[in-house]
Length: 187
Picture 1 (tube, helix red, strand yellow):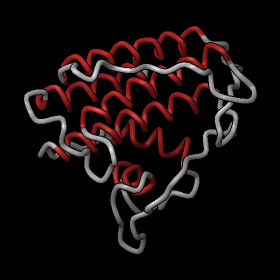
Picture 2 (cartoon, helix red, strand yellow):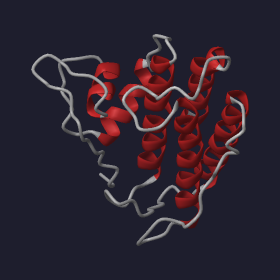
Picture 3 (cartoon, one colour):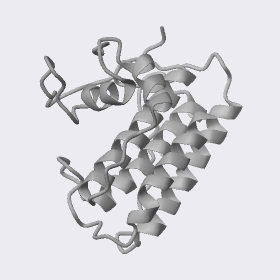
C-alpha cells in the first residue's frame, strides 16, 4: 500500500538524522525540522480523520500535537503512528468515498496522493536542512504528481516534477513557484 511505502521512505530518509539538531529551519519553511516532522504526523492524522468522517463542508476539528520536549526519534514514532492510522482508514474506507478538502472534495486516491506529497516533500525539506541529499522515489513522486498536479511540466522526471510543483526547485523554463496548490478533486 502506498501509505506504508511513504512511511517507510520517510523513515529511511530521516532516521539517520535523528542525532542532528532538529531545531534547524527545514529548508525554506518557517518551521524547524522538528516542527515539520510534527506537521507530517498531524497531516496524516487529519487526512485519516477526513477519510473516516467523510465531512462535506469542513475539516474534522481535531489535531495531533507532539510534546515539545520529544526527541526526533519520538516525533518520528508519532509520524509512524499517524501513517498507520491513515493506512487503516484508507484500507477500510468505502471505495466511493468523498470527503471535503478546501481545494475540492477528494476521493481515496486524492487523500493518498496528498499524504504522499506531505510525507515525501517534507522528508526532502528536513533531510536537505540537515545536510543529507535525499530524493523521493520516482514511482511515488510520479503517482502523486499525476494525481494532484494536472499542470505539471512534462519534460522532466517525476521527482523534479514533484519538487517543482510544490515550490521546492526551479526547472529550466520554469521558475520556482513561491506559492503552489494541488487539485485533489475527483476526476
